[in-house]
Each structure stands twice: as structure tokens, then as C-alpha cells.
Length: 219
Image (cartoon, rainbow, N blue to C red; front, side, top):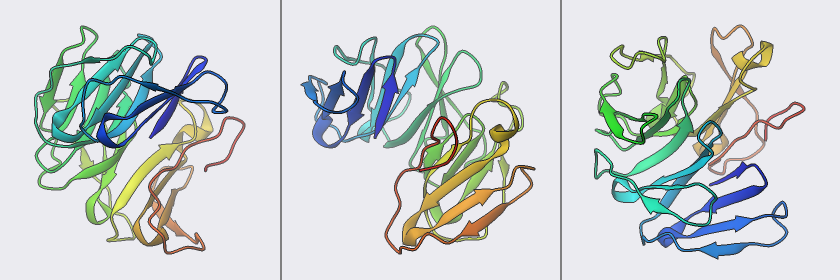
């Protein structure tokens, strides 16, 4: 998993691996993470200027520059699979069945919220949508109030979904979403936001990531 924050790109992976690049990925520098846990995802909180990485065993790390990292207390010991910036002054994470929704408030403290995910593990997350096991898709209709359960949204697949992204934070494209997963599955949500449609991918390989490119398009 990789993310760009300012002039720094951070990528995370196996055995606590963290690499940073200051030249758009031409060269990479290893950083000390302080853990051997598999790091599954990383995001950049543009409001606080911090990178947040998550992974196995409830591992949560934060860094103001991608270079020096520190451990944050997590309300779970279960694997975390995805992390993203929330709609308020917070950061969200999801993971294995039982994790629920973890929310990092502005004071840096994480709390667990039961928002109705049940026994399904989740691997993809935006600030209003989560996807995962067997085509699971949950939508938050009240993203600023985590006492409100997320809604189950039907998808035209029972295949595991690995990642989800949307086309920007505002304007017409904010409704456009793409999710990807096992067996080459690609789902696209139309601009009206009313439903998901299967799109041909040309592959049966597991697709593990998707992102929106500034200027338009998904990759």
C-alpha cells in the first residue's frame, strides 16, 4: 500500500517494512517502523499532516514526516486491512470480523464503534463506503455520527472485494466509485449513486488496489 503526502511518498508492507521516496518513486529509503507486523495499508491525514499505517495484530503507527514512526494504542488486536481519512477531523480503519469501525479522533485517541458490520471482514474503505468479504458493501448515511449503523448495499457479486475508491471529494465525480477484488472483478457505481454494475476487466487475477487519478480516471 502506498500514499503521497506533500512531497513524500510512503509505502508499507511485510514485516513492518516502510519505504519513503522524495522524488516521485525514482529512489526509495527504508525507515524504521519499530514492528515486524505486516503493514497492510497507509493513508495521509492532510489536516493533521500525519501518515497513519495499520496492519496485523491491531498495529497502528503514525508519523509527521514518513521518517520517524511511533506506535499508537489500538482498541483491538485483530488485523486491520484499510485506513482512510474520515469526513470530520478523524481517521477511520476497518479489518477482520469483529473489528467494527475504528475512529481516530483529533486528540489522537482511537475508539471502536459497532456500526453493523457483523461477522464480515472488510478490506476497502472510503469516507462513506466499506467493502470486503463475499461482495460485502456497507454505506454510511450519517458519517459524522458513528452511533448510526451503516447500511448494507447490494452488489452484483459474491466475490471478495479488496479495495474501493471514489472520484474526488466534491462535485459530480464524488458519487462515482469503483471497487475491485478477486477473479478480476471490477464494480462501478454510477454517478447517480443508486447501484453497482459489473465491468469487464480482461483478467481473472485478484485485483488488490484501485485509485482515482487527478485529472480523471481510475487505475
